Structures are given as C-alpha cells and as structure tokens.
Length: 112
Length: 113
Image (tube, rainbow over all chains, first blue to last red):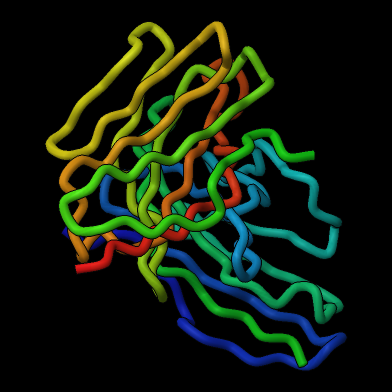
C-alpha cells in the first residue's frame, strides 16, 4: 500500500520564478493538506483540499495556490518565489473528519 | 503567534533513560493532540495521539500525559534507545474547525549509547 508520494524530492529555483509541487495521497484518502517546514521549525499549515476545493487556508499569501484533481492528487504552486520560500514542503493526506494524517517525505525547495 | 509551545529545544539522554518532552497550548477548542517523529530527510510520522477525555495513553515505550486544566501535555519515552534519536513534534487540532494541525517547534532528541 503506497503511502503519500511527493515529487520532485529536491528543487532549486531562482528568485522570482514559479514552482509546482505534486502530491499523490495514500490509497483511500480523499483530503490533501500542504505544510511548509522551514529549517529547524515545525510544519506550518498552508491549505487543505477536499472535493477539489480549498477548504481551509493558513496564514500564507496568495502567491501560494493549489489544486486538487478528481483522483485526489494535488499540486502546490508558488509564484514570484522569494528567498524565504526555501523550505521543505510536506503533503499530508487523510480521510475527511479523521485525523490519521499520513505525511509524505516532502519536497526540498531551495530558492537562490 | 505560536499556538503550541514545545520544550526543550534539544535533549540528550543516555540509553535506557527516560526522555520527556513538554507542550502547552492556549486554544481550548483543541481536542486532538498527536506526537510526530521525524528523521532527517523524511516527513513526520505519527507516533501516538490523545484526546482530552483521557489523562494518559500508553503505546509500548511511548506515553502521553495530558493535563486539561493546565492545557499541557507531554511525551515520555521509556527505555530510550539510540534508534529513538530524531526530532519530535507535538501538535494540536480542533475537531469542530478544519482538522489542520498546529505544530510545536520541535525537540531534537539524541540518545547516547
């Protein structure tokens, strides 16, 4: 049973560029959440997708956007990258109303 | 504003000893308190979780103690092993709101052989 799959594992982008990160949820899960984990910090909630709609959003600017597809997979898009966007981006999937989050291994984004 | 405060930032324990990590929260709407373990290069993995209707939950060597009146909860790792060396995060979520997690800042545990 595959867990949460994220791609790519590592990415280097230049300031001002745009980036798309991808996530495939664990089998049987229909909800995808994205978190940003800066070095030495705990993950911070970005947003959550369920039924292809953004259901909740954390304290992140509109440069961060997402999408969920009919097969429950999801993308995280970040526009106009800043140096401060360098972090580990984690995708977590779950069944709605349950808290059994399963995290992927993340995408390490470096903005130079 | 940090919704969940965690201490200590780092912890060094001898093999066989007890590791204790503490967390505190302010939002009384929180009703789910998990602990995650994270190894370098990996995502957080759920270790153990508790709801506020119980004061303690034990799974193997891992125990959560919960004090609802003090709004504090802690993780105890008994008989700590070198393989337990990792970063531990406490978290909290509100069942009536979105089930997004608020994480603490993490505790880096090192177990010395």
